[in-house]
Image 1 (cartoon, rainbow, N blue to C red):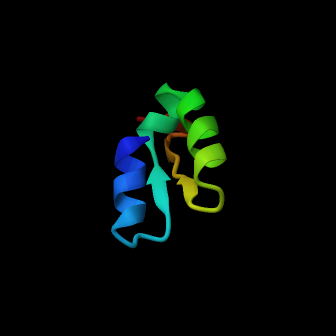
Image 2: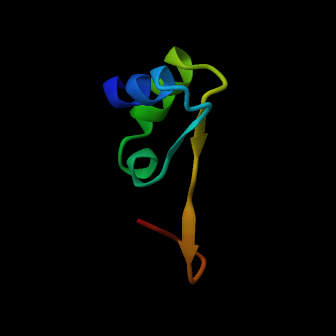
Image 3: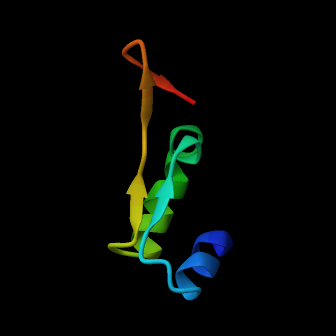
Length: 52
C-alpha cells in the first residue's frame, strides 16, 4: 500500500494491479478501500486461463 500511495502522491491518477491482484486478493480490497477510484486490476489471459 505504501508504493501505491507513493505513486498517487506523485500525481498518477490510477494504479493497475496485475499479478499482485491474483496472488493477494486482500491487497485489492485494501487498496480499493484506501484509494477509492484509483485502483484498477489488469488480468492477462493465455489459452483461456489467467496468466501470471
